[in-house]
Image 1 (cartoon, rainbow, N blue to C red):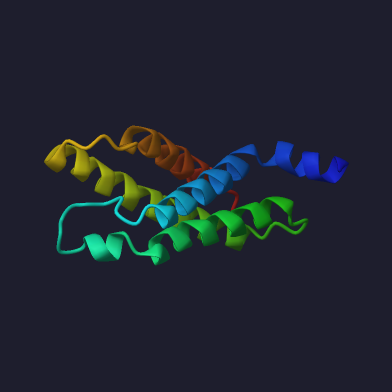
Image 2: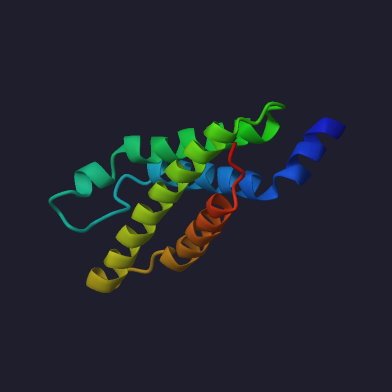
Length: 126
């Protein structure tokens, strides 16, 4: 139990990002008509694969937190994938707000994206 808490304390940002992406992924999977615009690609955007990508990245991020070896390369890949997914989601939600006037959490997602990008820029390299 001590090791569990120590890993959480040593990697709080990775833990929050992993949990947030898990939550976002499960939310996207459970809401089949979350995205409405543009009608041409709403079927692709609402596909469970999109939510599944968030779930996978979140699970692997949490795995990295609790892995004793903590590969720097895996960290870089996860931060890049997280940044990409969150950036696309944020921009897509922003476009929904601009075009349709639908309230979407694009501001909080933009803040999380910024945190991920700052964390990636400060990431150790071998």
